[in-house]
Length: 143
Image 1 (cartoon, rainbow, N blue to C red):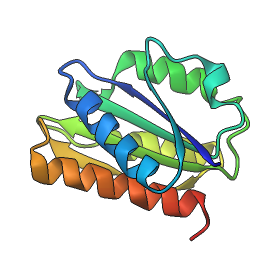
Image 2 (image 1 turned 90 degrees about the vertical axis):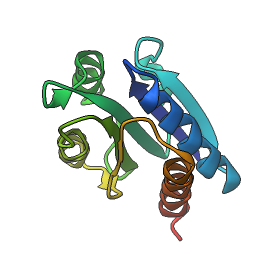
Image 3 (image 1 turned 60 degrees about the horizontal axis):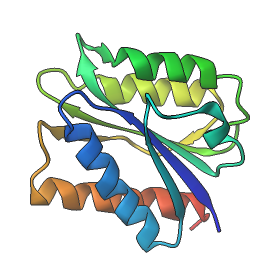
Image 4 (image 1 turned 120 degrees about the horizontal axis):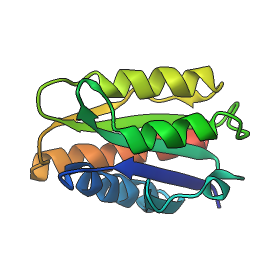
């Protein structure tokens, strides 16, 4: 069974809510999912995965600091050719998805277009998250 790790940082829990909905979409496609807040995540969690999904709120137009540190540590993991994706709950500036996606591309990952949700996702936003998870699952499975 393919495995995907979702690692996120969330100051307001909005990104956490998104992570859980993305996980639902992945699971609905038969993907094993490991979801972790970045403070609990360990690099060994991304060993042997088929996909890595990173989520962050926006911190002064940048990736949240703890996720930035995790990403820097993950650059030496064997991620080349794996599927990568980014998501963000934002208030004013949505550039974090592009920042994360560019980093994943730099690791040699095959990326999926990222997902942005303004503030806390409503039911329509949650459905976008689930569909995003399904889209990632299909790429992981080569469909």
